[in-house]
Image (cartoon, rainbow, N blue to C red; front, side, top):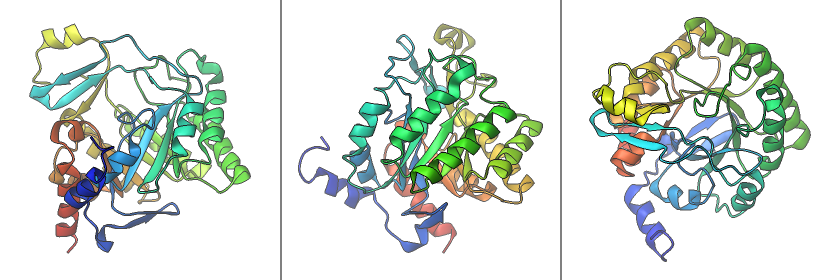
Length: 317
């Protein structure tokens, strides 16, 4: 439908909120507003131009891997309506970095584009950095910022990739590469919700030592406690990452901890359980500079973006 003439302009008129008070300048980029779409929705960079018409300030594509992969066997995405949540075990299904980079050449520059990068499932974790370096080089000319995704629970073991030593080495090299390739692109780390305070302290240390530009918190969760959905239904669904309202409290806790403990030393993008304008404002009050939606967008639709932006204007008037 978005491909019909005039539909994009109508959607921009309906959903986009334009106001200088919404603009944010972070890590060398100017965001029209602080509401973004998280990775996982436009995995293959097919509809980012159309999604931009709904008024997003930024859109993250991917997760992208070097080689195409089908992901985990279907069925792999499940709604939990009672909890306003999703469980997914997609497994980084995508068309591969070369195809996606080519599609991003069609960018109409209506919105900032982030590239979320990960390793192929078949790549041994001991050489995972090779996949990330290849993704980085290929996408560098066609994205505005990068997100290093080492926290997805659906792609096998990531123990090494989440270690402090690995991340310091990886992120330091990516910082060197972006300066060498030019122009420099911001680099952010995406973390999961299940890190302890000691592990969050390590995240702060990693950012300080590598000089990367910020953090996205949080990815999906494996914890299924305190859900309204029946235990039988959860067992029927099986493994996968949980997103949506059940993540709201923990995501906000992680944002607040990182912001307070680091004395707000770096930008934070808050994601997890944002289904209303009030949810988004809670993240901002906790210390998030920008927010991203995913499950809330699926349950609520594009009106959520406009509501969040109007709430921010109301609160900052």
